[in-house]
Length: 163
Image (tube, rainbow, N blue to C red; front, side, top):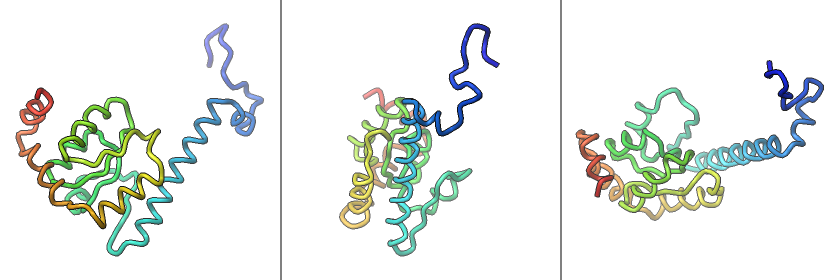
């Protein structure tokens, strides 16, 4: 229930269609369409690859990361877990709090940073996947990721960021 004197943003008589004509709703729908389009592109690429699976919105990454050859996704807190496992990663920032860390790890050769979610295109993801599977030395990225972490996580991460 809205506070007295404050009009609700969408009166009850508006339906979703009329809501979609507003700028903010149209922008949100456009962003959702772009995300769905990116997922569909990834699915198409993965279908063409032998022995390849795509996992989206799963409850736990732990067991999958142990078995995976590549991670494509957000650069949040699981970044350090992936480093401990030496899992090569194509990373997209989904929040402002991830950008500094992702740029830093990219400069160190620990991850392949594709940019922020708003700026990453289907073409950029396709290019990165193709490079990874056909032209990239994955072992180098794995070794660098393992080197930046060794089980003494807090100490190593603190040291890396203070340099």
